[in-house]
Image (cartoon, rainbow, N blue to C red; front, side, top):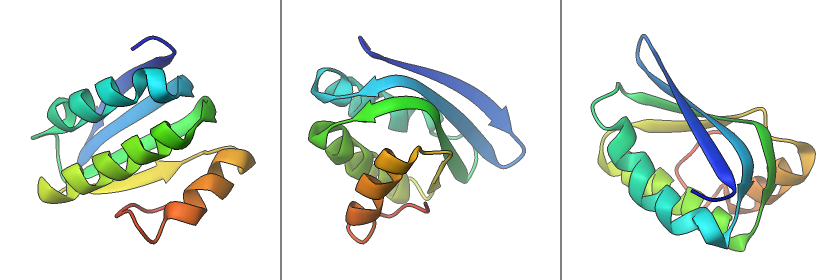
Length: 102
């Protein structure tokens, strides 16, 4: 992924993915394809830590929705933590469409 770094850390009942950089059109396809397979069989909870995520565009929001549905189909829950106010505002607008906790 070009403008996005993802670091995975396992915990008791799942995995935390720390995102840094930007989740934009350039990285959205890789994000959608890599994340569900990366966390499969890592536990029932997937926590996305957005503390170091600086920017997300509409393609990135679509990728988040896609991943939330893919994780639901894998019987995993998705939670987003530490999003900045701008990103949190965007995510809150799509919250009712996706299956994730904010």
